[in-house]
Image 1 (cartoon, rainbow, N blue to C red):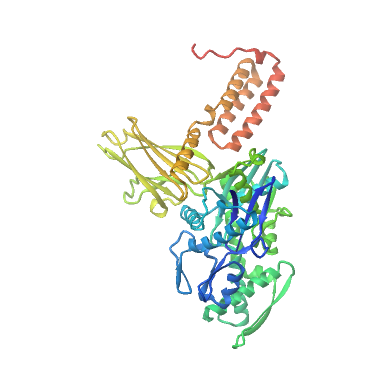
Image 2: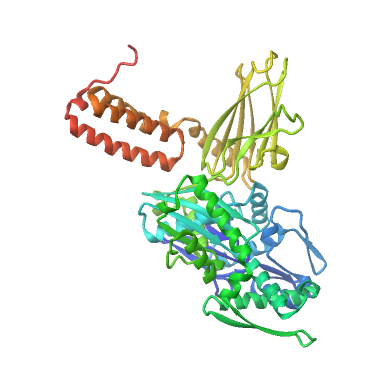
Length: 573
């Protein structure tokens, strides 16, 4: 059975599969790769998905829906033809259509997929995506961030040269910005940010409202059907402006509303200035979080259907002083990357050397007692946002009351100072020996993997341990246990692993046989290497190991064979 990759988009969705050493896009029943993410209920109760459903947004708006990806993880209800649907149920219908197209194309059953999601999707939105897949008959253990998928696709198709890339993923409903480093066979996402409420559809509405404003029409007073017709026409004009500088938007509904206006890209820039300002905020955030200067950027990769817009490409290129990479296939790169990730999950032989590391988009932490405002607990991050996954980090906390005999640990996700403003993920308790406040401590370890599995371990001073596992839906008990065993290795610090230990031992040996300025350089290099190991980030550790190995080769050449002949220290002495 094949594992497919799916780009579940706000406007369009598509699927891909890795086979025969390459990634193939999967056509739908109409022979097209892009399936509109729209659902409609026909008069006879038939469920329509894709282009037919999208066309009915105007003719049957009360029986049709689109753009429901934005509502994933919320309680919003859509009523179509008298039937009620949640956003994940509508998404499940799109996913089921893609699964059926894949089965017809591949000639075999498809029961598992890797699905892409916006990098800035929170836990509730990711869980809703997995529920949608389950409703569509798909097992989804792995969600891949959309910019990560685009970066993987670029790595496969453009070679594996070392680069720092900014992936600007601007789709129909969401904006994701990621900094990605490519090093040898490792594709590592360094930082992510985004805006889940900003996409190409916002430009459609801006165009529709600005057209009405310039033509003296009260947009808000129009019935839903006419507003939808204007938005659809605005979308067509936006797409036309991709290939030409001017286009005429004309409306005549035969019922008294008749107007036309010449639109240009300059006009669109003026009317959309607020949207452009919002685009720059995530870009600034990723550079700040990654500690990388925009001057260090090698490539600007723009993906997502809305990145076709010339005004967007010009604005981002001017903001970053970097022209976008050509031939980055904005519409299909995320699906191709998801297909490659599906091949990696299926352990395809030709992908075994490729490593993808991703980051945690939101901070994970615990509630900390707030002495100045006891009723408002503070967020104490243990895993900071943009930590490379998988990761394992520890926080140490003390009792806050005399004779306290229990500690309640509340686990939160979010960036706000007060826990009440973040998302509560779970709670556990552990006993502690009574004593004066501050004399008893607990160690809280968070271990988080790339599939969204979070293990929380709490250890008190007398060795008692409590554990809680928070998992994305869709993982069996056996899969959870297998992943937990794999995560045990993360609890070993990189400096205690065999390769780094050997490198540190080599450095100590060289320090012993050198003198003067060379000895100082070896010592400084060892200190630097320890700092890189302490980050526990695979790509930084790999780069540091390669660099210090090259440095030690030079030192050995300088001092001669004496460095190689120095006996190992006897640890028993």
